Length: 340
Ligand SMILES: C[S@@+](CC[C@H](N)C(=O)[O-])C[C@H]1O[C@@H](n2cnc3c(N)ncnc32)[C@H](O)[C@@H]1O
Image (cartoon, protein in one colour):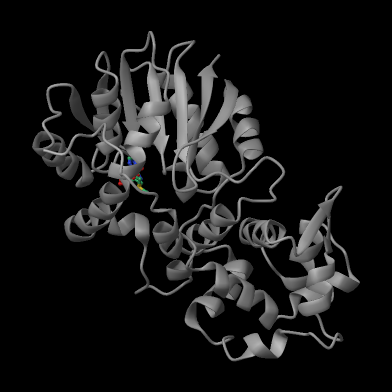
């Protein structure tokens, strides 16, 4: 049986980067296909101004601008985006170094085209009005898809969960509720690392059954149980630690606020909330790996990678006192908050 407290001997960031950052190039291509930088150079604008001119919507446009800021192609000065010298020299009409024709042959790549659609509609790519299209959240209610997707999350979770568990201070805490737990590997790794802790893996059917089996196979069932339910409707009582691992990034701001409110209602005063995810930094200038990963999430889900400042604001509004951000591994980290 795999020891859930063990860490790999080498750093797999370069490998994960190919998976996480795959969609960044298509996002850049999509922007060049509408000659974005030529326009922005002549018209420094707020996000709202950019959205108005191009017919874009806020969430995907924000994800795009974060990618460009992380590359230092734009700078946000008091809420107004300006192109930088490198963007003006290479990504605009006019200069001899103009790269736009070099990207032009890629404009019709399916993901680049999807990005224009997502930018305009704010709907994840597979959901854009096509009845036969793929709905990720619905698919997770189907046994076959749920099994494959949960296996994918579990494979990454084996690496991430031990790195997270090692950095957590759970002194004086007793039970972690792993919300949208997938396989439950995070609850298992946390209880393996912190022997005084119990865990509850909370997910909807059929993922709950998949989690139950995997927790049993991992030999963690004596301290990690499974609870079934819809996290938007309520969360099991009795835990003093709530973990949202890679869950909030699947949802838009209204849903994130709702989930924080439901968590607040289920935690006692002093309860610890942990958000484990890939975070954009407070001033939304990087890191690049996360800004690229955010494009993938923006394309496939209703969410994106939120910044530490966006989370701090939403946590405060929901009745939590936000704590610090800590890095873990492969451009992931966690943020804590205390329920007021
Ligand atoms: C991206 S996965 C994250 C899994 C795991 N926490 C991790 O870090 O790998 C999101 C999880 O949220 C669960 N989920 C989505 N909607 C849910 C709901 N309404 N109630 C409970 N769980 C939900 C999904 O079934 C899925 O397991």
